[in-house]
Image (cartoon, rainbow, N blue to C red; front, top):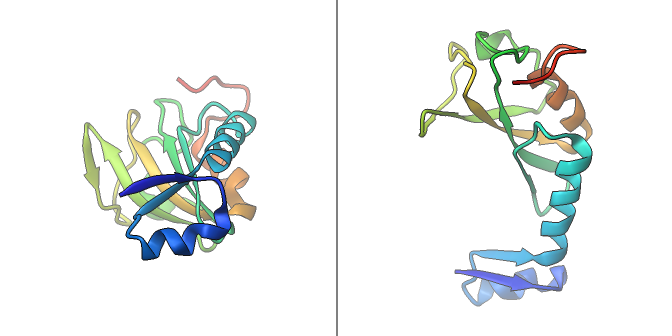
Length: 131
C-alpha cells in the first residue's frame, strides 16, 4: 500500500495502518531539486528516513571513469555500497569481480557526506561530456 502524506511525523501511524510506502510531496520535490543541483548524471535519488544516507541510481556511460573496471578496483568511500548493477533490463548482484560497462546503471547506498564524491567517481573525466 502506498499513501501520500503531508506530515512526516505521522509515518509511524501509516505503518500501523499497513501503509508500506508513505510518500511526502515535500520529499519528492526536495529529491527532484537535489537531482537538479547535483547534476544531470544522477538518474534517481532516494532519501532514506534517517536522512544520513541516500540511494542513488547512477548511469555508466561509455566514457565514464569506471567503464570497464571491476568493482573491487574502485576507491569507494567508506560505508558506500554498490547494491545492484542494472544491465540490459536485468538486475545483477554486484561482486568484487563484476565489471561495469557503458550502458549499465548502478544502485549505490552512500552516506550523505560522500554523495558528491561518489558522483564524481562514477562520472566522466574533467572536461569530457558523459555520453
